[in-house]
Image (cartoon, rainbow, N blue to C red; front, top):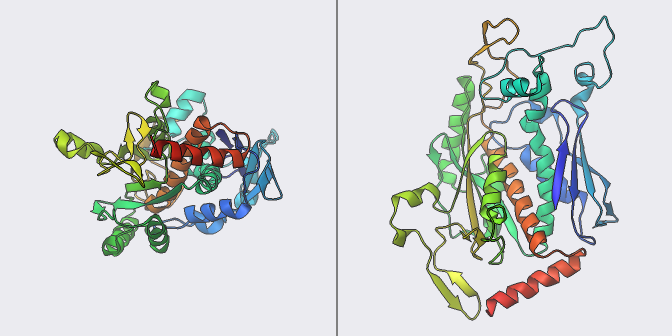
Length: 388
């Protein structure tokens, strides 16, 4: 299974094409739109979220509530495009007209300058429109389809905020998946720790008042994955590696860790590795989950726990210094968006990006063209490894 996205931040629409879904899988537009609306929430979001009401339209691959096995196409229309038609339209300009709102001042921390150097764009709007985090809406749409598939296979996923501006939420290992989902949805900053909720919001408000931005850490937990998904045989089949790559591909993400992560470097082996046990009901399991559900690039059957680090958004209301690529003079960097903190929304994005990688791995290991056969195969495999 794979997907492609297309579209620019202020263009007509975002498009997602998903290929490789099995036929006869139940799928409704509500499954997708619920995820898109979750991405738009969160304390610290800018006015853009008040303009765009992200709703998807399915234009292929689904009929009467079930997938067909052919590519599924999802479209998210941009209601604000009417104000950008002259700037972002595809038609050639008349000779006496100039391109409006050109960008010649690259913003530090963005793709502007590197993209201009790579593709030769003198107007860096050609870069920033595609490199914008707006593209994550299309990725969330793809992940929503993956989450629907996984849920029907008994695999659930939840994303939430662990840290904002150095304010750290306490671990909550005893919470059920349903409790994690409900608590994160009810929190303005999508945290599971009510004690730090208000301090996190205060930090976001202060950053906005100061014309600055702040980042944080988000965590995704996956339950219900059987052991042995992924592979130790080749580097590109290690599932934790693939998840790590997909997380870092999210705009502004700069680091990933599983389980203890970097803390493992500061502990002895006896405090890092998970002892193996067996029971009639569970089969093989780990007494702890310090490695975050992975050993040797494969799932252990324990919950997958992965964290992602998001840097502060680089566009500031007290802009950093840059250089105009035309005049070569120093200028204050231009402002294109106004979020002071997008960490709560980023937890939704990461949740869906991880979901797609997991669904992709499941479909590689159990390659069935019909969803009922896929569900049966996974149930048989779960029983096989329980009795191993």
